[in-house]
Image (cartoon, rainbow, N blue to C red):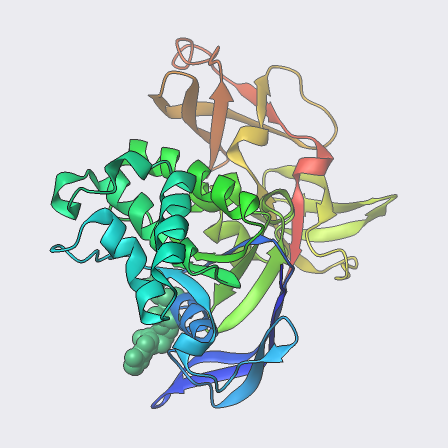
Length: 357
Ligand code: ATP
């Protein structure tokens, strides 16, 4: 298992700065995700690790080896991209064997390793088929076997599941995690799909404009976003503007147009003092609807639009001209929404994230 270390990386395309002075360490054996809005630099970072782009500044280490200027085929990275592009005229086994033949591996060993790689993605019984005789998910498995068969030092995946339908994506993402952990492979995974990242990653980086905004476990990033852009990018959230009144023990006290809140700082290293303008971030599922108001962390209002989704109902909760999104699991207030009249939405201080400017 190796670490991947990025030091002060800058990559420009003409006048566009795709990566700026970026630092990142991915730990050995980690399944690490790169997330962020379109154009933030995810693919550029991944392709720099693979060796397809040479950065203007900075260094890339695979383990202890500085690979910054090493050609892609000498890095021994396994890759799987959006278009998995299997050779249509070759069988599954021939497709997987291709990388080994290029490396002049002896015939017997090729046969054995292709068998093992296909077995590891549960495709050994399909070895003689051509790609057009396989489903999308099966083709994706073959592409994964092809990346694994060369015994790469690490795995680089760029939107590997984007061509699959929703059900197959669910199945394949668990499969990718299983394979990465089984082979103890440090893996970097680029996706637009937050659920993919939240469900299988060990840690993730949220990027914006060539920078990394936050690195953490799915839980850390979702529950304690350090900035508004991170809270906005991952999951749904209600933002409430306010001003700091003071500190009460571990909580920051904030006055807003719809009530007073006790909350926790998203960035534990940041400081908030009385008078500071801050934004509160509350996840829609953290609200509880009821009738009892408390001195703080409750909002009076009424349900506007309601959408029933089976296990959950999504409400627009209107309070003093402010609309909050509130999700209620096992909905009780749905039928009563019109006649319920005034309700109280409350939230625990631990679920109110205070974001400083
Ligand atoms: P997406 O989610 O849309 O795939 P991304 O986060 O992967 O986006 P990149 O593809 O890394 O973003 O692009 C980062 C920036 O660099 C963008 O502004 C993009 O337009 C620019 N860029 C990327 N590749 C090139 C290229 N080959 N030539 C010129 N500009 C490029």
